[in-house]
Image (cartoon, rainbow, N blue to C red; front, top):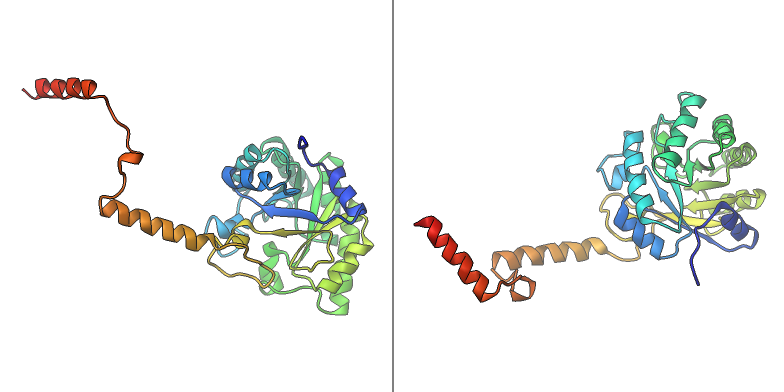
Length: 286
């Protein structure tokens, strides 16, 4: 069966038919190819690249140009997966006009299918303007990493009845503003399930339980490539960091021992051409 490019309509049909939506991050060409070949529904080029790729303490310093750079790489590698570009800190908060302009860069310059931004009710007008300009928007509420200082750290959100109600109101406001999807991060599973049931658009959970319409994880986390802080919600499917480390050490040892490269990994020249080459060398040295 020939694969077709995933669209928003495909994602919405999954919500309507209670089929879980799959999403993973990717930050470059090679990882995008692998995720695309796995038949994932969506790829998020997240500003989480600031931590797992750039070595930053959080996502706040990531710039628009850095996001566009990585999004371009991903769009070259992923041909069928629905692509979402993460709008970095201060690329959409300063003014609505700037938010629309920056969102447009993700689609026009970087090949993304949609953009994602953080915030609830306070971002509704910005979402509405971007959608009005013809660009799909994914919302993001709960633990919003760009606001980690304001939240007092990477902490679970919506643990009280009052804060859970605020999350629901945020989700409803984003849906009304035109979001096609909402990420729920670090939210109690019962709260996320209620929010998902109240919305007609789909929810993507990360640390929000199985009651969401889909799930997303960070590529480096689930493959064991990142040795930094690992949240409770991360499931590591393989420890590639350990395997890669072993391979690197083995390579170093083989080079030092003169075992690599061997004849298997070496190009050869015909004896006739070699003799001619050596004869020319002798002439130049004479």
